[in-house]
Image (cartoon, rainbow, N blue to C red):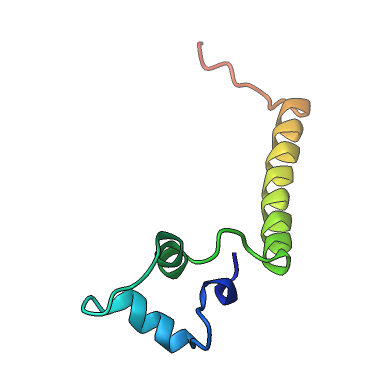
Length: 81
């Protein structure tokens, strides 16, 4: 849901702000209040792609590190003597 869908006819963003924050004139629906307090439900694609790439790099770094650790066993010291 976009902010334009929440605006009433000939209403500006400032009027929406006053309508949803001023307790003496409070006239917000549940959807309007949730959008106003928490933002849109979904992020736009231009913000999702960099976040996903960053998280994928973290994941792959961990997987590669674990595989290297398994394939290259360390010399163990025998300190029991």
